Length: 437
Image (cartoon, rainbow, N blue to C red; front, side, top):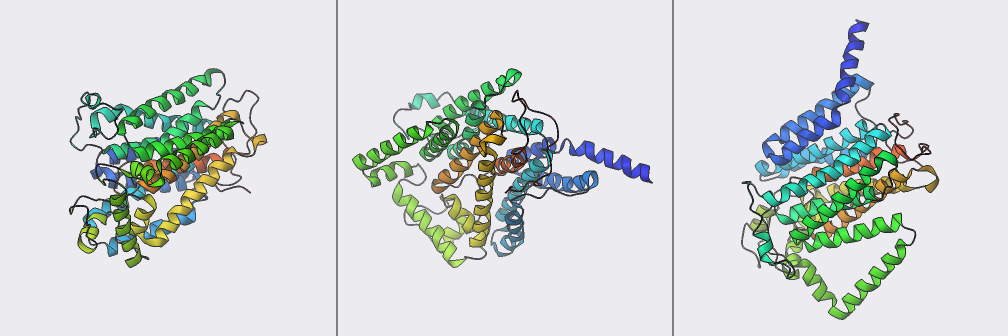
C-alpha cells in the first residue's frame, strides 16, 4: 500500500512539473476559441488536486488569496442577478481561467530557473501577438495623420473573428514594459541572448502598438517605460522631470480640453463628449446596483434598455471604456474593491522584488522593474479603456503578470551568485508567496 501511494505521489509530481505548460496551453486555446473556456477552467482546477497529491497542499499561500477568494465568491452572485446568463457565463469562466493561470504560475515557479523561463515565455507571448496581429486585427484607417492609409492595405485579416485594434493595443501596452525590463536585465555570459530577446520584443511590440493608433495605449506604455527607465537608471528621474515639464507645457499651450479631446477621440466614441456619456451610464449602473453589479458582460443590453444613450445608436457600446468602472458595473463596488486590492498587492510584490538593492541579482532587478511598469500601464490605460477585463479574450494576461510578480517575491532574499547567473535550485518557502516584511 505504501509503495502504491509513493508511486502515485511520484506520478503526481511529474505531472505537476508540467503544470504551467499545460494550463497555459489550455488558456491560450480558450483565447482562440470561446468554446474551450470550460476546458481551461477544468484543467486549471484539476491541478489543485494534483498539487495536493504531489506535495500535500493544494496551493501555496499568496498575498492575493483573500481578494481572489472574494472575487470567486461573487461569481455565483453575478450569475444570479444577470438578465443575460448566456453572456455572463463565458465572462465568469474567463475570470476563473485567469485565476487558474495565476495559481499555476505561483505554484510552478519554485526556482530561479523557472522564474527565468516564465519571464521569457511572457515576452514570447507578446512577440506571438505581434506576429498574429497583421492577419487578425481589423485595422482602422486615418485616426492619426502620420500613418498613411496605404500602409494598412498591406494587411488583410484571414480570420473570421477579427481582433479590435484597441484590444491588441491594451495587451501590448502591459507586455511592453516587461519586455523592456528584460532587455535591461544585464544577463551574463550565455544569458545575453535573453537581453536581445527582450529588446527585440520591445521593438516589435512598439511597432504594432503604433499601428493600432490607440492613443490611450501609447500614453500608458510611454509612462510605464518612463517608470522602468527611472528604476533602472540613476538619472532616470531627470528624464521623468523633463517629460513632466514637457507635458505641462503642452497642456498650457494647447489647453486641457484640446489634449483630453485628442486622447479620447476614437471611431467608436467620437470624442470626449461621447466618452463622458458612456462613463455616466456606468456610474448610473453602479449607483443603482452597487452591491451586486448588473452581471458580467451585460453592459450593452442594460445600458440600451435602462440608460439609453443620446449620442450612440443601440448596440454600439459594449462596455464602459474604463477598466475600474467596468469591474464595478460587472461585480459591484465590493468586486471593484477586491480587484483593486489584487492590483495594489501585485504592484507591491513587484516593488519588493526590486528592493532592497543589497539582496538581488541584476537580472531580477530588470524583470522587477518591468513588472512594476506593467502595473503602471494597466492602471493608466484602465482609465481610458477596459480591454483587459471581462468580454476581452486576452484578459488572463493580467493574471499571468500578477502571478509572476507574486512568484518572484520568493526570490527577493535569495543570495545572488557572483556571476549573476540563475540557479535551478528550488527557492525557499520563507514567505509561501506572500509579501515579506
